[in-house]
Image (cartoon, rainbow, N blue to C red; front, top):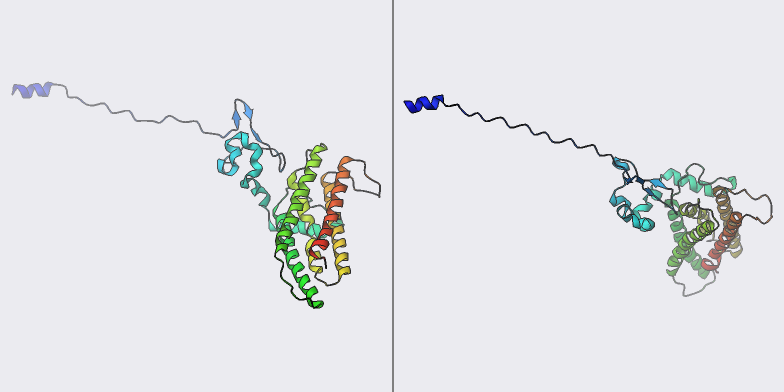
Length: 287
């Protein structure tokens, strides 16, 4: 009985409720491209403009989209070797390519492919050069067959080596010619011109070579020569006009030799372009 009374008199222990856990509020992260007060920018020396790497959400360039240059700044000069870098030049609408092809075919109006769209594209030049190469290969073999058939020449065979030659000559000239002109312009102090713009101009300048190649199927040597000369001259006129407008050079008013270094480079590039057009006749249609 006494033990019961003592137990009743003893204070009963009630555990204190545990405090509710409230996680510490973390500051909202806002992406900034600063380190020690320095702003980092993505320098596109040859192909594009200088663009700050800022933004959020879909606008942030991740390591997978920026390649090595987004992870290691030391590799920024090697961005031209990253395939993802060229995505911006192939993100083009069909209507834009058609408009530039129309501009190349209607070069006598004096327009430029950068009238409505300032961003250069490489999809059009790639498609045009590949189409011209395939057309040259096909029409050259077909013309050789027609020549053999008209002159009763036996032993005619399909020349598949012309396919490799056509692709090598077309793409070698477009890339090599634009690169050499870009290097010469930078050597003369014209730093604003981008290599992608010159590749775009050179690529669309080959538009007129597609109908020229089809007309060369006519088995008359005089017609072929006239077609090649006229097409080369027309393509050269388009190239010279776009180069002068893009480089902000005055259009020539006479036959006087230009004294400005940039104008001289544009004239030299146009002369080489015209001579290159004559290669088609000598190499692919020698008969």
